[in-house]
Image (tube, rainbow, N blue to C red; front, side, top):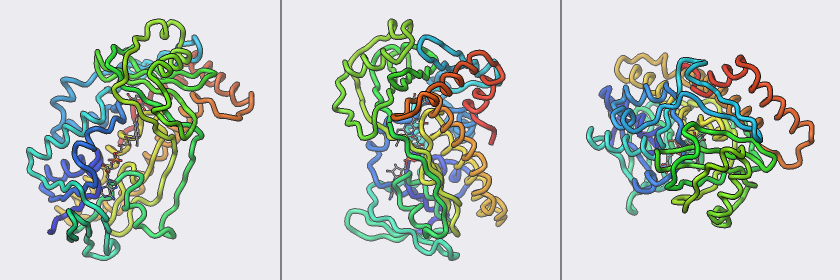
Length: 389
Ligand code: FAD
Ligand code: DHB
């Protein structure tokens, strides 16, 4: 098989890249390890920046997003009974849209089917060959048989545990990492959300987050120790612990019910530089991970795709390679700022085991300052709604 761009991974990054490239007349083949059902079943991000929404709309994915997504003019931070409204729209002129990653992925699959692009599911043992030459190719196993896909470029969109990043020799990349000593236990429940706007809560018992998917579907998270088994938490225990971390007035209004999904996500900040090795490019979680506290993971994947699609279209349609030469620096510039923001939100809102009373005071002072200073809230809002591309 031959294509112009071989895309490893059919998550949001790989599918969106395929969508934008095919719209511009560039051929792609997506190689995905899992089944479509598995990819669609992963409950993950929920908050889309306006730049993400604009990119999805331009890629022909705006219909259901505009109908079913919820525009949020603000969000809240809380600390005990102190509630700090962050008026995103008023402070920056833009808000965010709540629309689940599962829905984005579903829209992408439908759009790709309508365009008739090639997505191969169930591939194993993917190996990227000759990335630094002029004729790279990808080998993979499908139903027991080995295959070869020749291409002009390879896009590594295969997430944190994929093969693409590891294909780059260790002496050609630099990794930066912070692993946090806690994770998030997330619950999806068929209950009306306690708050229309997303609420990030600091408390002496740890962090809690209230989010939503629609008027009858809520998404909640609590900070838990690293290595926590989600099945060790009953629904009742989860609701009780979440309530204890919210302002009393909010906890009193919390509608509880059976969970429809429960999982634990570890928290990590990670960047691998550069994002290019010859004709191989890293995109999204394959290159970087942010702790979810700033709601940046999916949004960063979309801005990477935006930059790379522009660069590949220029290279393949006009032979202009300036864009692909600049991709890594351009994307990293935005990635590092989102890294900083996600790290600062995580530090401000979580309890760190063994921390000194000084650190707890710093957290309280930061929240106190935010509650009093519109300048501080504006800075947070500017980062939360997403820095410009
Ligand atoms: P992925 O979504 O990881 O997609 C990579 C794809 O590549 C997968 O489909 C995988 O099956 C496939 N793949 C992997 N290895 C191979 C291989 N060797 N060969 C072929 N295919 C391969 N972000 C937020 O903003 N908010 C959140 O609440 C949030 N929660 C999260 C919870 C979890 C458990 C995780 C893991 C992430 C979460 N994120 C969240 C981050 C967000 O979901 C990611 O940033 C986003 O999914 C990145 O998309 P991606 O396509 O780059 O990577
Ligand atoms: C959601 C996830 C986040 O990481 C976040 O910061 C806000 C909302 C969510 O799943 O809805």
